[in-house]
Every structure is written in C-alpha cells, then in structure tokens.
Length: 381
Image (cartoon, rainbow, N blue to C red; front, side, top):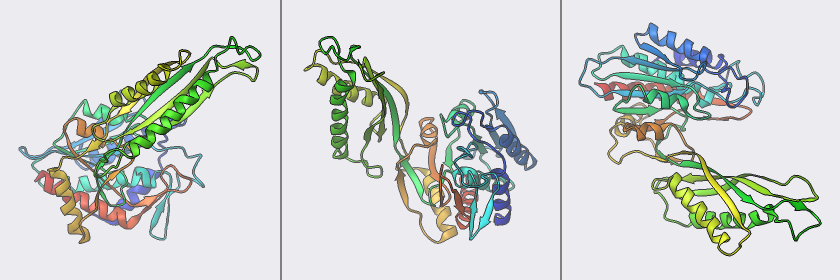
C-alpha cells in the first residue's frame, strides 16, 4: 500500500515548482523545471524517461516501466502546467497543509494528481507486471493540449487513466468544443449619411437573436444520457471605431459545446445556415465565418475494460462503487480516446481550480493514489 505521507510530500514539492503556462501568462515559467524534477524522480525508480520538447522550453515527460510482455499496457496521464500565480491569494508556490487540506496553486488542478500518478506508478512498477506502465506528464494542457498530442505521436497504449480532479467520481464522458469567428460586414460612412452607411453592428443584432434562439432549440434537443444537450453562446463581440461613423465590421467569437455526434462540421453548418437565412431576406447582410479551433467530445465504450478495472479498484479501497458520470468541460481524454485508447478520468476532490484559493482534500488524494496502484497492477498483470 502506498505511503500517504510520501504522496503529500511529493505534492508539496511539485507545488513549490513554478510551472505557469506561458501561453496564459506571457513570461510564465513553463514546464522545464518541473519536468526535469519528475524525470529524475521517475528515473531513480526504474522508469526509462524521455523529454519530449517539440516546443522549446515546454517539455513533456514520457516515462516507461517495461513489462515482461504479452500484457495490457496502461498510460497514466496528467498535466504539469498551471494557471497564473498572480490570481492566487497569498503565495501560490508555498503549499500550506491545514484541516485535512493542502493549499497552493496547482494543488487541485492538478499537481496532487501528478503526485498520485508518480507514487502509484512507481509502487506498481516495483512488482512483476506483464504490461508496460507508461507515465505521461504533459505540457500545455491549460492552453492547447500540445503535450498529450506530442505524446501520442510517440506511443499509444491499450488503456489510459487521466487523473484530472473529478471529486472521486469515475468520468466516462465529456463535452467537446468548437470556436468560430463570425464577421458581419457593413459600409463605413459619416454618421450624418445614412444613405451611404450600412451599420454592421445593427446587422449583427439579427444574428445575435438567431444565436439565442438556436441555443434554446439545442436545449430542447435529444440529450446525451450523461452529458445532456449541446450549447452555443457568443463569447466576445467588437465593432465600430467612433461615435460619428457607421461601423464597417462587427466581429464575434462563438463557442459551441458539443456532445457525441456533433463536431466542427456540425457547428459550421449551423452557423452558415443561420447567417444565410438572414442574408436571404436582407441584401445588405454580408458575412464571413471561420472555425478557428475545435476538440471532440469523449465517451468511453460501454464495454470499457479500464472503467471496470478502476471501478472495482476504487470500491475495494473505499467499500463503495464510484459514481460514473459525464463532465461538462473538455479534457485530454478525448485525444487519447480518438487514438484508440480505452480511456477514463478519475481524480481527487477539492476546489478552487483557476481561483484565488485552491486546495485538495488529502483524504481523497490517499484514495486516488491507492486506487490507481490497484488498477495499474490489475490492468498490467
């Protein structure tokens, strides 16, 4: 059985290392220091470690404990980057243990999870195992998931557990997302010349109303059993230059949250349909639309082996079967699943992700570490 004190001590060491994502905070430290620490820690415990660094200064760790062969391979996936320190109340790099909780930037999202991965994987790897045990500690999850994408160019395992915080629930599905830019075009003119100007912002109003209506329609569509329905909203809007001029453009960023069966093509068709319907009744309504980013939704297979193995491991340690549910936000599970890996998500309880005060329940950290060790041993035996 894993040593709870060792897990807490490792979580504290990880919190003390600045790993703010520089895509979120210009000049942020990035993952170099924490990746080096993790690689050295895992190497001492028998893992063959590689630094994957397609983006200079932004390494991910790929650490492998080879099995004896003919066994199921498993990946434990967690991210090393955090959001800003400036938004944390107090000193985010100085972990504080109080009332059964551990506080600090990344304590919840997700350095405690990384500590659980490292301790559990090392304990499981010290025993005979047929399947490979792979630890993927990745960069850039908080921005573009570049780390997991890079890992998948080097290795694909039979199954995976993403150890994002889940409140000790077993997450087997989550939504995807699509971002799109929509620009409505008008004609610039002096504010005193309505005969020459076309107000792009006023034209955009019709589209905003259409988006609101479409969102209501989505909310009444057939729901996914664990994720409910998709959604859509306008994230940002900008247009115009000054009070005395007709605005030539009004630009918006649209976010569409998707469920299985929906994707970037679904979203682009929906947006073009709304825009073309308006333009068919208004000859002055001109637009551009472009999908700029998208990530797929995730749903584990009904016969997921790792879901069963992990659920039984959690129950053996806690005495209770975990709640199996969906999650609203996106995670790297979708990338792993799309690569053909049997994937689930399971992690600690706590709170304050990206917030001014962030903490993890130490009791939940103990449960996650122990359950992960059992699941690794069972999956790779």
